[in-house]
Image 1 (cartoon, rainbow, N blue to C red):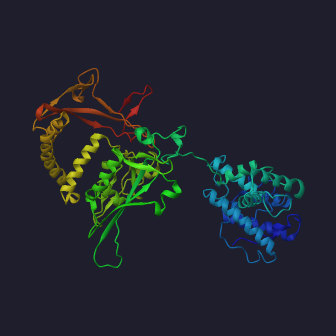
Image 2 (image 1 turned 45 degrees about the horizontal axis):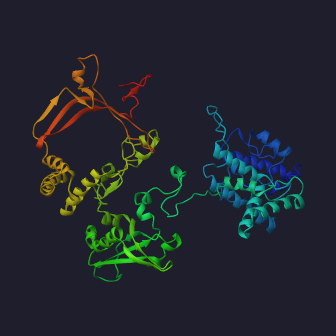
Length: 587
């Protein structure tokens, strides 16, 4: 419980016994709450809590200069929000004083919310081993606002400079005043109503600077007229959007063409029914309308309903065929439409921009399985997951991969899964035509095998290889292109025999295995794989030593060369790779 602060009102009569006793109680409370033994911040009107002093020094300053009258919440001296006050704190105060204190407390809470990491405590550690430092940028802003809060509007004023400014700006906002009228009010108050030397700002421009430090400012960001992107960050210098309209200029040239979004999800239509039923509405959203209209219920287009005893699941594309057929017609051919505003006929086309759905419905609409260890569509095989042995559930781990390489949590085993995390963040999977083709085979295999999701890795590989071999053979009968020839050779697998050699020439570069290189003066056994550029993580290159060169033979005279290497741990600064002053890499 904080001691009574009524003695602070006697700052103009500092020889009064009540004031002197209050100073002693304040010092006792401050040293007890802060845990300091030697020095605390001095709250006199000269030091303004910016300098440290011994008990005797602070006591002398409070008697000579007086304490800051508005410093009623002793956050520099150990008091915390919600701490009860002494019973005699407000006994002799009238209602106006109470209201004023409550108003000041609201400003204090605002500062607390704005800078939660700065508790206002002393920076003195009580140990000579630590050197004092200048406050950082955020701390300087905090102390600047704190000084305005502790600074009275004028001598003997119960309101501070900061709280008065916030109230005036609040009245300006509620009354819809112009900036010019607010500046006129400030000048009138300062020149005609307030006493000389009042700490009131002169204009709205100066007040706006303080509001920005309070975090109440705003920043304008331009957006595309089609609501497809923000001109922000790397796109801040663009004059127009660069995606859909550039890819399809013939569609973009006609502003009356319709741009659609699709949303779908299933639900039980009969809440109390014992019979299981499911219904999937497929809703289209027209994005030609303004943002405040396109998401209104009456503007939605209910294109189709898919009812049944169970949800359609991954087979929803079967039920979407009529809708897809209409989309193809609207996109490729268009439909003759009458424009009532211009009284002219024109060819209307439509496009589907995106789908809106939750994660389970995403699986149904896209065909990507959102269950199992490869549930993430962005990271694919780099998804970090484990299966709980007792819960029998898939658990997604590896969140420490997104931290910087020197973050202390990467080395903490006990707080996480018992291992040191050295892996870089996973790369986002950007689908190429080849990747998409591979996914089509995986999807087709999963749909044709009901138990595919429950197979182990080894069983999945065994069954997929057999299925892939037969499937490619069927496709090869209908397509004899070069790509299909390569795919057929790959599906057959390599022969049982492989060729090993001591060296190989790749793109004009000669490589030797390490054992062979030991006999030569020049060394060609080093291998490096350049890391991909990633703005969110450190660009790492991987170094190794070539141990063996293996040549695999496939049917139809196809072959693949493999390098077997020993790789260095690039994350270990001691055992890993090192670079000398000439930027050469060594062990």
